[in-house]
Length: 492
Figure 1 (tube, rainbow, N blue to C red):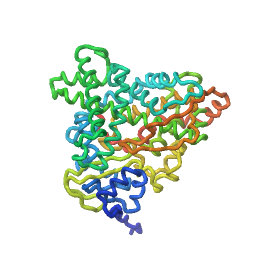
Figure 2: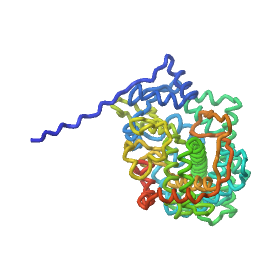
Figure 3: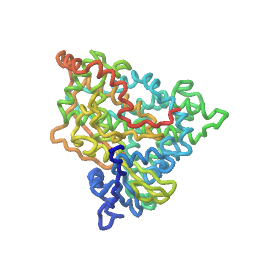
């Protein structure tokens, strides 16, 4: 006879965020102090009801609930205030399309972002970062936010358009992005369409920015159709135009534009913010910075940029990227909408209910991460990740809607960080204070730092080489699946 104690079913707690007038107080709190508001919600329960203007919504404050939502895209489909607004910008691209349309789009685009294709781009990624930081001079005050946006815009320009996007157009895309991401957040926190139809200056700026991005993409597509620059090259635009000419389920011209706008906006901004955040955090944590510099000096061994072989050996650099994604995830708040009546945390949700989850909230939970407010890249070294609660790290989501370009983004950020760190040490200006502005993505948008040239020191390089064992180097090759969480992607 077994003496085992039967496992008891978990009892979830469901609560409501406090507020005398929640339809007003919750959006104000989310807009004025978004991260503090998020961190206050787990005290109210595992699933917490909030108000987004007049609409009720439920925040999943526990990783198991977030995974339940993400692993069931039929019931919890892309939708809610964020994706309703994103569709107005991106159309029905791979990020915003409903579940029933996703598989075909994923299969079309996935080959351009497989690990083998990412490996083909590694030299390019390093060169683009080197081209930007090569112009810096000792003692310069560098707009780090603008520089990282330039790096990622140039990289995506090559991957999507084979560099067909001119420098003026690329600069305009970056300017439009700054307007768009702030406007998206306001429209998510206060999802009242009538407010944004009023012709205020901010509403006009938002509409103009959306229109300009679409027009820029349309112009590149039109030039390619006429045999302009990039014709016949192996890029995403060529993939889409080839599919548009196909006989079976051809891609429409509208879908070509939607996919390109989607990949351009998501591939530029989030990666740039992660890279800028990493440089910001390293300047605040000298020991992590010293360890990264030692590794870069050892691995690059005098080369200006890393390549595919060096990428696999940048173990600690990758840990810095992982910890940046945990500590300050660019995508910090997402919405879903129920397609039918369902139950979450034992609570009945009607069809059409808005459900939210926040990588920032889940990745700052002390039950999942020891000392969650500390920046500790060492927590991701081989042998250390067992201390992290499984499934709590989801900067790229999980399931079939997991980020299409996660492998590309991780490689690009790691290579760019190593390239910059091989040349420069960045320092905050005297009296620097962070003044984050709420937006649809999280990260520094006006970060100015002073650059100091670095010279490789043999002692540092030797220490870096000793600190990275062969086992650690081999383990670095398997880190992609570790950071992204469960991979349920229908990776055709």
